[in-house]
Length: 129
Image (cartoon, rainbow, N blue to C red; front, side, top):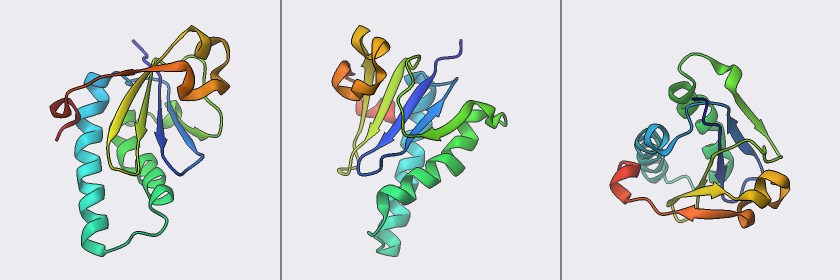
């Protein structure tokens, strides 16, 4: 199954779109490990400027490699929400990941973004932490 998804980073207008492999079972463990490493690197370096920009770039390069499984044609970055996504992963400035599921209004008008979605409650251990 394709299972398209978005990854959204608070403070960055870019929206990462993957047209397959976007189920929580596939994404959350890998995203959790990736984010743990990302935050550790940021903490060790003491770098705090441009974190949303750095995070999106590294999601595309490092996390995208694992998500795409050597087929990068399914990975895109843009400013618009896609109507076909099944999950939206929101990474907050508080370093927490929220999983959202689009409702009917989202599929009709994806520009509504997260306000037309409902949060899917996931256990922290599902995120890899």
